[in-house]
Image 1 (cartoon, rainbow, N blue to C red):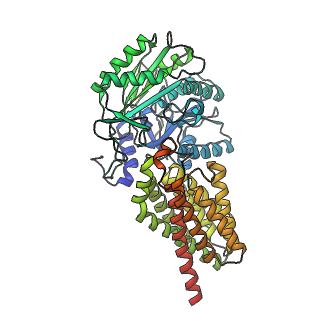
Image 2 (image 1 turned 180 degrees about the horizontal axis):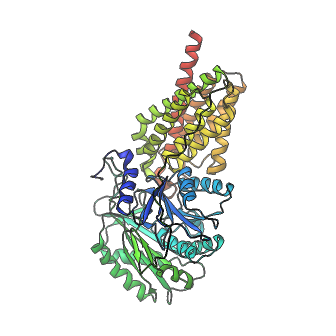
Image 3 (image 1 turned 45 degrees about the horizontal axis):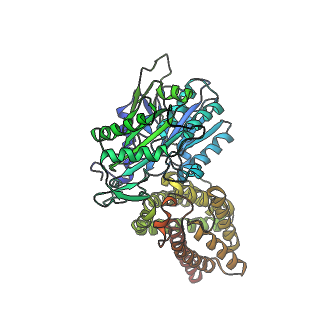
Length: 583
């Protein structure tokens, strides 16, 4: 558990402030994360990494010479928002472009892809390399679905080296992608981790047992087996990792390998060295040569007791990258040249305040206030249900769905209240609430709810009070936006399983002439039944997918939270209708 904290909701921001204060000669604060204190040289690609907080030294500790130019820092175990990624990338972008690199998690993919599209639209060349090193998170035939763990370091080193050679964006991306294709990792855990302010760990491991194949966000392992000796654990790592050779590698004998033995928080250096003694012996016995091994903490998970082993199969170029000098707050190797470089200072200025235009008519302004009340009702509902949503998510995922939804709805309600107080219509209220939700919640749900609210707001607009048909069209736009971007379909065990029946039911009732409140309430019932039915599904997307059997019998937390939100909105619409009828 976290013994030292103030407000759990402010933990990530306060930790970043302290990190910057401790390393002012190396990093500076930028909106959304941190960047080097030195400018990216002209003509060099900027390397931007990132992900959720809670994994130090990933990601801020890996910003510096020989490593990343900047890191985007999301909330604890939550992906950064698209806005954070965009602002951090803009802070270091050059005419040569930006390479984005991060662990392959659904929320990160959604938000980094949105930011990439925005950067490209503004004329900034941008490419992405996702890290997919965890062999237990998907089969070798679906390597593109694997998540990233401590292999991040190998890929980031390759990308940074290529950028510092002055290679163009496509070449930098190619080197990083090759490093990713030749990196394999495996992790084990002896206990779970606990989020700041929480009283229970995200998962537990039976005493005397070990979870195999866990993730760094608190995802439980694929299987549990008796706790081995250090020698047996080292042999297990090597047997599993050498069983899958990268494309183009035909034999371990004669291979040159970079090795990362990573402690996840509670397993310390002396214990890691005991394991490494076996790792090095087994690799050398197989005929491999180890190049500059790293033993320590490189991607942690708060106080999780766990270890991961990463192998990077080197070629000449990747070996040059791996052995190159580096100087970052948490990673230093060799001697870095310090030429005349421009020193930059913190850029923590607040974003420009968006001017909120008043609605075109009194009826539209009233609709804006109703939209505000809907968002506030959803916030209050999530506040009551956050613990239960977290419990549902912890069965096969990382247990943070309730926390993320709470962060997002609190921010969304604050933005909606400000917009409604300024006289905005429902379109603006929903759009600004969506932006705030996405920015503060992070993760998959934050990205999807933010996208949905903005899409719905664009349809509803600010010129008149929307009819039931218009609201149904807005919900359909939200549904289309989520499915087009997230790629989930009905049956994947996601929020789409309740969203699609809700949208279809609302449209059908509106077409039959039902009033908005009546149509919405009926559609909310449809969503609730569909959400409950997800208990019979196996997840095909997201962090729960590697643990699909564990989720059988438990409904999807995203589908449940959407259905609850729709019922909260129904209460507001019914109350508003009743007030109008009385007046």
